[in-house]
Image (cartoon, rainbow, N blue to C red; front, side):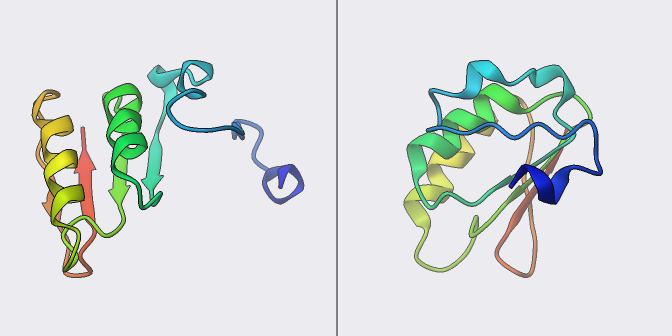
Length: 97
């Protein structure tokens, strides 16, 4: 996988399970985060830990039919951070902080 991203010197690939690997990430420098884990707990934990000022988060299946529990969990996570989620026509959610 590292070879695919080798041309970008500031990309850091972190392997492991979320949320256990989150302490390895310098959250002051997260510019873009795409969450598509299909699991409520790690996605909410990742949002709480990595949402930095100026960062963009794309939430896959945020407002997609059948994902009501996931939407609620994400809403609770971002409410504590004082941000709002823009619902896209694709069912994705977009956060710009």
